[in-house]
Length: 321
Image 1: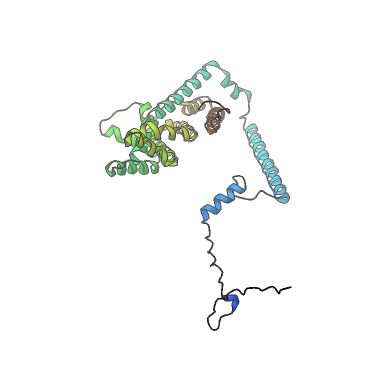
Image 2: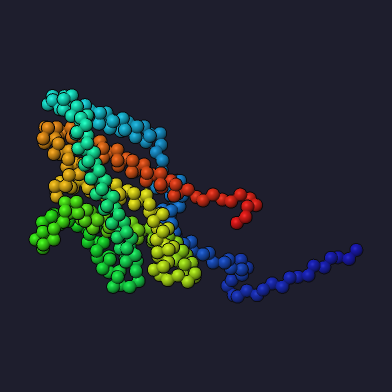
């Protein structure tokens, strides 16, 4: 039986002073890139289901429940104390509250409510398109258009509405311009709210993907056509809940009608209370009306947000595209 001959494998020559283990050097390790704080924050939000903080544990939930119960007890005590003070001073007498069941008084307050609605609707009818134009101006490429629009928006957002109403009340008559009480209230509301609407529209346009504008350019549309036909309608759809919330703020701005002696709802309640010595009752009734109106608008904003937030239905399998 012949012995098996094993061929020797050639051993690579090593340099002096090197060992066989160092002949094959490992691949250099890549340095891990530390994610930015924005990436980490987004990952944290995704991991927690949209929450930036960890959910409370058993002790945390107990502390939250105890704090909530104590807050409710304190609130109930304050309400009871206020009712006691009203009763001591005769503000809960039925004679003072039965005034608001009279038909003439109800008609008087409903007329003020209609005046408030008119101020709100007319102001919104002017402020919304003006805000859209200002948003397009701030997004314009021409600096001669962009800079004046930005200056107007930043200035009018900083000027208090009450100061602007006083300017219309005392400043315009000195220049020979006479406006009715209605327009002395409406125009300051339009000027200030248009700047806020402009920022809402601009935020909606910035939130859209850049591909929308690029696709409109690929179809042959110009810049202004793309904004008017493609970008701005989608921005309005996205910002509709925010627009409704700003309309609630606009409704509350109409309560400054007392400055120009415009008889809107709150001013009529003030006049009625001073005449019949029911100022507290009148303000409480009007406050309840405003709470109901604002809650109705907030409910409409929530419904609109949920409706716009629904994803479009996917076509059934086999359906034609």
